[in-house]
Length: 449
Image 1 (cartoon, rainbow, N blue to C red):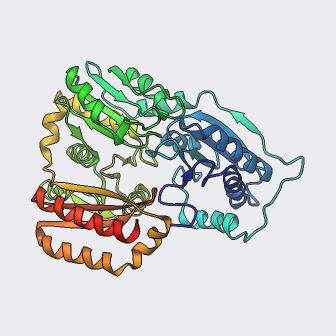
Image 2 (cartoon, rainbow, N blue to C red; image 1 turned 90 degrees about the horizontal axis):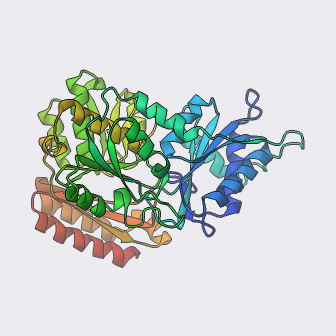
Image 3 (cartoon, helix red, strand yellow; image 1 turned 30 degrees about the horizontal axis):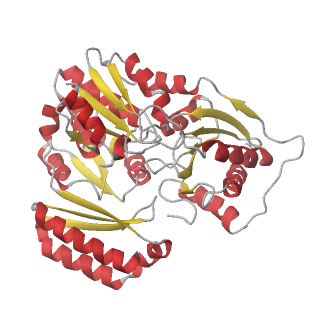
């Protein structure tokens, strides 16, 4: 994880940590590292979610990019995976998404994608960081006749919707579903997409006002969707996060179906059709222990990576796998997308349910979930640095791991996107792991809070 870019782009409180000046400099540096003898005027796509600060940061990025000589195509409010997909369709050299994903509205972020639609590799991120932070190379400015141009692309959302529709072999006719758009990017795409696929849709939290993104809704707050699906006897519900690269589901009984279950269901379906490449599924160290057991029982290999969808993607590209993701709902269908795509994932999940004429509640029983406790401990920025060397924390982790033995596990890690340490315990006995998790969280808070 770099000094400027975390596991999912550069993030911070808008106008405080993520300022216009910083955004403009990131734009300048990003253009500089892409300009070469073959690409004199690189084209950047810029998309954004619905945060109040999106327009401000978009303007700053435009200024930075154009001042160096890059051209810009503005996509407006679109999901993050739309930016990644449209880079190829529009033959652009890079893409930028302005979003802080599932974070509250006061945060914002800048994610950069390569010409292939993948998140920018570490070496290019480090080159940008070197220019912005270390001033290793003076900012380059185009001559007056070489300044970049700006163009608005009105068809961006529709082009993305059409792409997702084309990946679905069996439509959603006869299904009645609810969609929680988190007052974010999917507010402009989800209703049209799932209606086009044949479903009758009920829309929740699809009226963004700049400050209500992710507020008590979306994939981080599932309660209202769970209740709505149950009260209205719907077939299922889907919830997206602010930039719609995540998807969690609700079954016909109003029960949560998290990312582990979604990946398990979709991977086994791919295997049954002979489409699961290398007979493997990629997850992370946060993937539930029950998922490992599920893979073993169904003759599939489970590949574990560090937390972060970029690490899942790296493993998939390196080894040739085609499905993977995270419990949080980042699911990568590499046959159709270069990054996590919440709406595409949700569409494929509902499509296979409809094809089988089955209930999501019955299909979701294929995996047994081990009890899991996750506590997010807020820490200082200095605490994030000291975490890696704090002996008392290391000793406590080792002690709890020994207490659990082979009945469970403990994982304590610094968040790559927020000022938090995440304490996760998993095991057979919920009361035991809940008590141990609270004990560990108190130690972390006392040492780093």
